[in-house]
Image 1 (cartoon, rainbow, N blue to C red):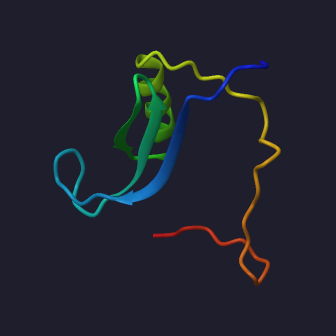
Image 2 (cartoon, rainbow, N blue to C red):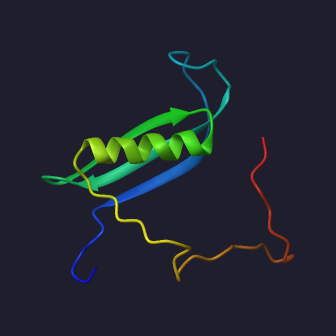
Length: 94
């Protein structure tokens, strides 16, 4: 895959609904944000009830825009688990 550059980014984050258009106000969701290169830098956002649905929606959006997703199997060599000074990992909880 030499010479192929990644042209997109996907961010999935916990989100508490603040409007009442699609979900109840205060509902715990996941917001997805994608940035991609297509005639300049563009982005799109959306929400979903689960992390998996948010990831699928973000990937589907990119594919619909003609962005080729070239996933590599397994974790990247740059992936790190961040831990606080106590040495015990902490997880986001509502």
